[in-house]
Image (cartoon, rainbow, N blue to C red; front, side, top):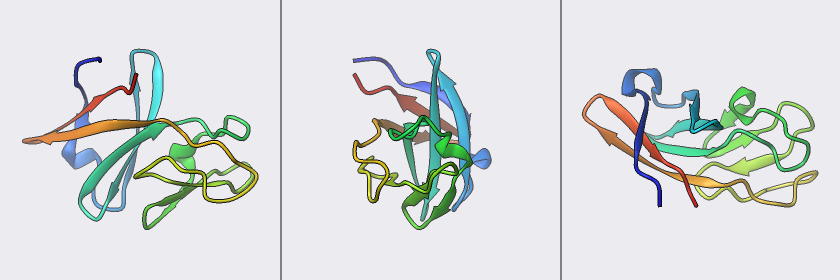
Length: 104
């Protein structure tokens, strides 16, 4: 399992906010839902759309390309055209910094 890596300052991920980070060459979309940070792959499983550019409503992000929605807490695909979940990564807030550990 990989180690946690710093991805941004906590101030860059306010409640209801989004942030794009690159960890070991992998694009991640970070979200702050009600004060809890989540990280998923920044790639829609339908056609590779950038999820960090999608609209966040509650704990759901919508792919800006074709409207597939994902639960940022679990990675689960919630509606067509996506069927496959996105990878979810562990997130920790340490002081003023946000850290992510990539899923294996």
